[in-house]
Image (cartoon, rainbow, N blue to C red; front, side, top):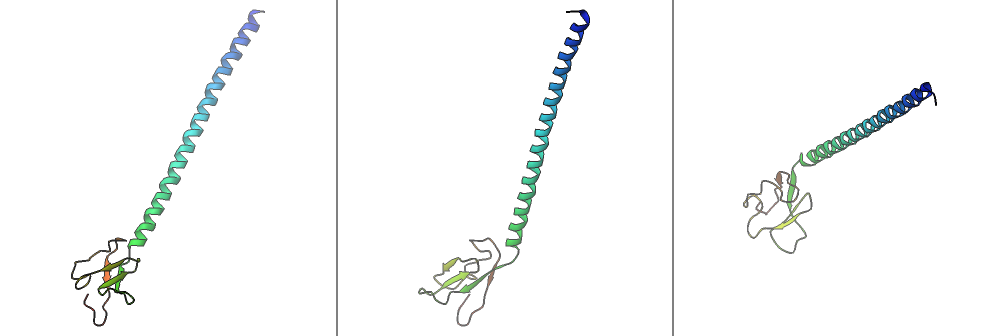
Length: 115
């Protein structure tokens, strides 16, 4: 093998090593770019979920006396919670927020029923 062919082979091996390193760098950068993109999508989704949760909490939860209850003093909330008060109603017990959904409680006025 001549000196020139040895230099070409050495240069070729060096070029292959450099290309492999560059390719590995590009692959790593692509993986990082993909990871950043996934993180951004997750952040956007969690932000959207947070905004949806805020919209759910924006209005009050209405509390009304439950008409079909067998136990007097039973109230039903708009979110589906049923609660029985021994005396009075949610106002006497200081219900400012619904214990189920966390919204501010809006106590409905009913005839003959003390809230």
